Amino acid sequence: MVSELINANPVIYEKKERRVRSVPTAAADEYAVERIDQQEIFDHIRDIKDPEHPYSLEELKVITEDAIEVDDGRGYIRVTFTPTVEHCSMATVIGLCLRVKLLRSLPSRYKVDIRVAPGSHATEAAVNKQLNDKERVAAALENTNLLDMVDECISPSYE
Image (cartoon, rainbow, N blue to C red; front, side, top):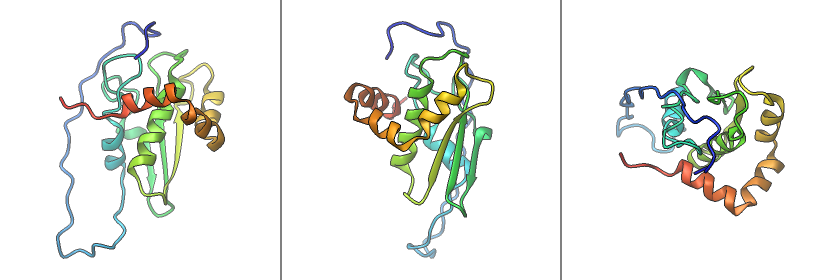
């Protein structure tokens, strides 16, 4: 993780109880396209670890289920996250973690849009531009140190 803390004393929130997802019956067509909803996206990203603290993005309320939009018909997903401080230097890393986790978890038919919540970051426009520019994301993922940090944040923790 990071050696110098940007937010030394973050507020920690209680995790939401995990809901059991209904599983289609065995009679369902195995080749049918499964619908993806807000809860499923939240379940994919809720346990991503903060790059600065030993807490999940859910525990820090960086992400919430309400800040996820899914248009399954159009194959569009938007995740809006809120950094813990307005000048968070880890905002682009957090956004990159969200993007990589979803790209690795979802079918390729989805376009994923990652945004900083309006008014929650000092350089909101620049962060949003960087997180949604394919070339910038690809270049960031070529940096082995950054990719290692992302992989560490999105790796499962077995509590």
